[in-house]
Image 1 (cartoon, one colour):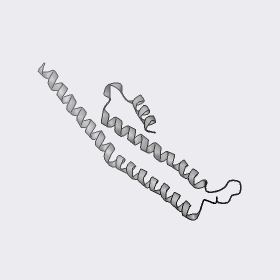
Image 2 (cartoon, rainbow, N blue to C red):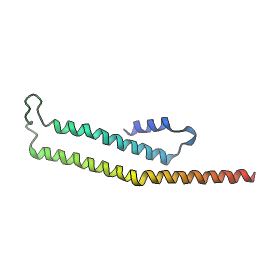
Image 3 (tube, rainbow, N blue to C red):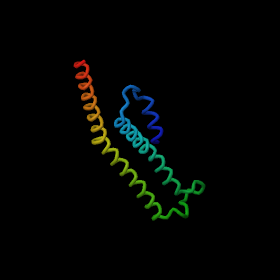
Image 4 (cartoon, one colour):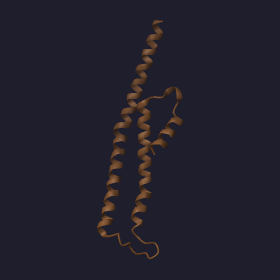
Length: 118
């Protein structure tokens, strides 16, 4: 997922305006979104595998404790992913955006000063 996100980001990124921080944040953000989208079918597959399709009965290994354990693992994954996505949405992405914009403004001012002296 990270590789796909990196390739997608590099494809749409302006070659003359590549910066590390926005690229890293974009790749990680896309990877988180892809992981959360992928988790839904994985959740359905894992929990539906407890039922034997030919008989419609639960498999022998699918005890209530085992199903509860699998459900807890999937629930914890959902909570972890959505917590990390919330941190990205409200802290990391705005920080990267405003830091990069400030960096761009600072770099432009330095270029103007240098050109004005020559």
